[in-house]
Amino acid sequence: MGILIPLVSVSAFWAIIGFGGPWIVPKGPNRGIIQLMIVMTAVCCWMFWIMVFLHQLNPLIGPQINVKTIRWISEKWGDSKNLVNA
Image 1: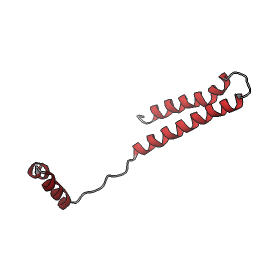
Image 2: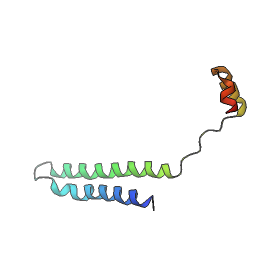
Image 3: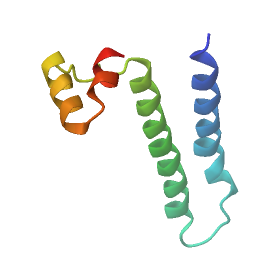
Image 4: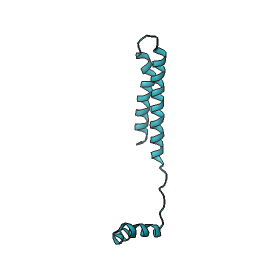
């Protein structure tokens, strides 16, 4: 349920912008270009948002550091007893 609310609300927002935005463009020689820009902006912003949102659901596992490497880093950086034994 926690995933559904932001997914539906943000998708609805960009759908309103993408479908409703072109209707408010005044008549003129560049009306088609402006309508296309509004639709493409809505599509690109939604695509960027959905990719970031979905990648946060299943993040990649961070790098695994060897214990020997941690000890070496803690000795070189100082305060090794507090870092290794913590």
